[in-house]
Amino acid sequence: MIAPVEIAGISTTLPKRAVTNFEIEKLVDTTDEWITKRTGISTRRIASKEETALDMAADVAKKALEQSGVKKEDIGLIVSSTICSEYVTPAMASHVQKAFDIDCAAMDISAGCTGFVYALITAASLMDSLSIDAALVVASEKLSDYTDWEDRSTCVLFGDGAGAVVLKRSDTACMSYPVLGGSPDHEDVLICKREKRQTPFSGAVRVKKEYIHMKGREVFTYAVGAFEHTLKKLLKMCGDKPYTKIIPHQANEKIIDYVMRKTDFGKEQFFMNIKEYANTSSATIPIAMYDAYKEGWLKKGDRLALVGFGAGLTCGGVVIDWTL
Ligand SMILES: CC(C)(COP(=O)(O)OP(=O)(O)OC[C@H]1O[C@@H](n2cnc3c(N)ncnc32)[C@H](O)[C@@H]1OP(=O)(O)O)[C@@H](O)C(=O)NCCC(=O)NCCS
Image (cartoon, rainbow, N blue to C red):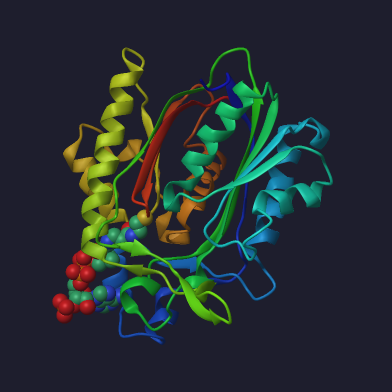
C-alpha cells in the first residue's frame, strides 16, 4: 500500500554552465546536426568541480521544502535517488538530512534512470507503513563525472542536475497505481562498474567508478518496449479516469517519438525538455515536472503519468493527480 499523498513542493537545481553541441564538436568526432537529429539534445548543464551531486541534492531539497510550506521538523523520511554520489556511505539522503539538521529516516535508491520513480513509490509506501506525514524525495546526478569525454556514442547524451519533491499526506490519494519492474541485463547494455584495486589480503576490490558503457541500439529497444508497456499498464489501471498527460524519462527524443507513434497519444500530451538538459538519469523526471508546472503545461487537476526506464534494466510508472 502507498499512503494517500500529494506533491506539496517541487524544485530543481541545475549547474550554471550550459554546454552546447558545438562545444562537444571540439572534443569528439561529432556534429550538432547528428546529435540534434538522433537525440533532440542541443545543450546540457555540466557541473563544476565545486558543484557536487551532494550539494545539488541539499540545495534542491531546501528549495522544494520552502515551496511546500512543510516545516523541516515535520519531515519523517528522506529518499534520494542517485548513481553519482561522491560517497559510498553514508547515503546521499543522510547528507541532505545533515544539511537540514533533523532526525528522520534516510536512505538511497539506485535504480538507474528509473530511480526517481522507484524513490517516489518507496517513499509513499514507507509513509504508509511507518505512519509518516511528510517526506522528501530527491534525485541528484552528476553524470559528467562518469562520462567518457572521448566516447562520442555516450558523451553527447548526458548532463547534470537535480530535482526534488515534498510528499505530504492528503485526504485523497493523489498518487496512484504504482508500477515497478525490470528485466535482467544479460548483455551489460548499460553499466558503470567500479575499478578494481589490489589489496594485500583479498585480491581485488572495487574502489573507483569507471565510465558509463552503453550499447545504444539495445538500450533503445529495451526503452521503447518498457515505456510503451508501462504506459498501457497504467492506462488499464486508471479505468474510466485515464491520465491525459505524460512525463517520461528524458533519455532521447527519438524514444518518445517512437512510443508516441505506437500509441494513441498526441505529441501535445508528452512533456519534453531534453533539448535543454539532455539525459540527467534519475533527475530528468522531477526536472521535467518542475518545468512543466512552471511553464503552465501542468495545471491543477491534471492527471499525469510518470514513466521511467533505464539501467538494471529497470522500468516503472505512477499516476499523479496534480494539486499545485
Ligand atoms: C545512442 C543513440 C543516439 C545512437 O543512435 P543510433 O542511431 O542507434 O546510432 P548507432 O549507435 O547505430 O550508430 C550509427 C553510427 O553513428 C556513429 N555515431 C555514434 N555516436 C555518434 C556521434 N555522437 N556523432 C556522430 N556519429 C556517431 C556510430 O559510430 C555509427 O557509425 P558507423 O555506422 O560508421 O558504425 C541511440 O542508440 C540511442 O538513443 N540509444 C538509447 C540511449 C539512451 O537513451 N540511453 C539511456 C537510457 S536510460
